[in-house]
Image 1 (tube, rainbow, N blue to C red):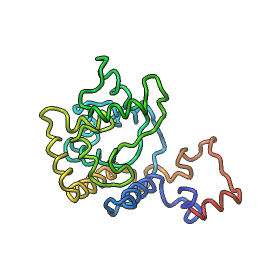
Image 2: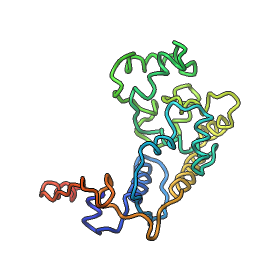
Image 3: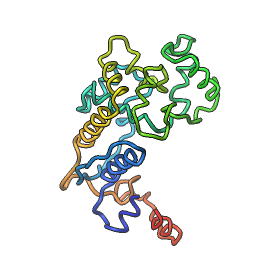
Image 4: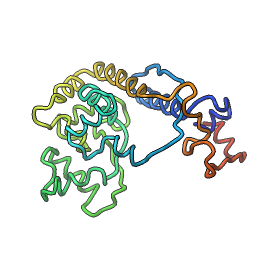
Length: 242
């Protein structure tokens, strides 16, 4: 996408804005809501994988950790948390991100007790102990390719794939339980909250004006000697058809 945009209007549209638009379009094209994003973001001149891993929620997080992660970046730890988690209504996850729930949850030697028994057996067949951790499965067992509210029904039925999913509903006394139930019963309410939370997340400390840069390659900061520029006719055909 970046290559196509650079060909049409060089050094104008940032990778950050492309990602923002692509996120909205992927939701809308999958049956979810659409919304208008503020644009004009610029790209960072640095990247820190360690810091990103520290700030991003983990699939192994408890609810308390999830809430802390959201608060730490300026999002609220209830409606933002539940609404944005609803993005797992589509997409895939590798076995290595949830297999511990199937065999040795919290070092107990037993599976996660919040997992539905039938769902547990299905996942064990897909992800046997000691098996290939890169095998993919659907985050939403009900409607895996549609953006809808079935993710929340899955949580109620104890069929959340990741620990961080099921924690929203299965943590005793959690304020997120009522929100899951609202979204489960009312898709329009979920869509409205999701849009609000996505816009809020997209506006967290953006670089604008003369800050940062417009990257020419989304994988590299400008001036990095590792950037490889290609101009073959086959690539041009691919970009045009895209």
